[in-house]
Length: 426
Image (cartoon, rainbow, N blue to C red; front, side, top):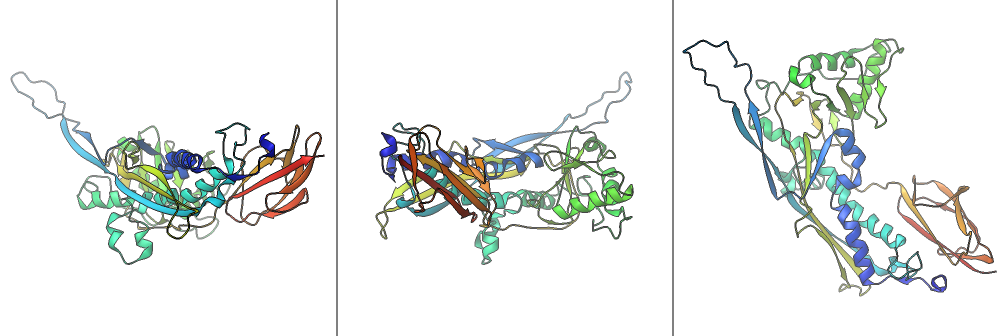
């Protein structure tokens, strides 16, 4: 029976399959690492794009209709086409691990050959997730010109051009400018001076009134700012009404106010740190992944010169960004400053994966008094009490970490944790 099989290396074919399955998601970068953020900020994800995706934006000219006068011809061009390109660039990384970290019951958790390998899947995901995090770090502040920089922090941001870089290029090209109505000055928004100071909200409301009327009439407008500016605006709004009226927070963390009914304020760390504000329609910020290219893949290599037990994961993908429509009817930015707020490699929540071996009918594990039935996440330094409960006719034997008591305490470290509870016949 499968429960009597001792855990061992799952095999090259199985590990390669695990890496390929995980890799299909990882190469989507921020769309995998934080899809809720992209949805909240109104960023559209495009997959299957080419190295350079070019679309055309029709710029129309309005206000040319006149009363008809017989014999007086009217000739007006409908408008002109403007190219908007999304340049996708190839990135890659190699991660080395050891096959000793991919050991579990050879027939999988369902007792059938070719079953799932939850422990190995979590281990592969933990390694490759840093790749997705690196891609996410470039979403707004990526700048390929940093590739030759001697500053390591800048090199981290050289994978592809992010949205702030796209905006800088459009400003340099004169596409975004005060004359075109999509670059509008706004006083700096700072912390309220006291509990009666509504200046932060008043400032953004005044900026809103200067937008192109067509933008204000859009069904939904995403207003981007940093976390501090979002907090100051919300505080200023409450101060305006002496705390009796507050902003309306949406389930996704954005907020709205009645005075700007179509606007969703979207404060985020991804936006950066500074006084720059931007308002645009949903899906106007686009993140593209060339998911169908044969250079987008995850591959495994077994054995290195240092250790025949090593396994190397090579992952690479092609991605880029663009602001599709920078015209005043769909986009506006303030003249404030902005700086990156990017930290790579910090520990995040620990994923806890528990499997049972030989437990019999009714066997289970509880975590802090609750039945464990799916992968869970815990903040670093959280103390967890695990209790192994045997099924009918079985007795607890040991944990995979060597502990021989059914009840153990473990501390979340910020890294994935995988434990197996072993049982034996009573």
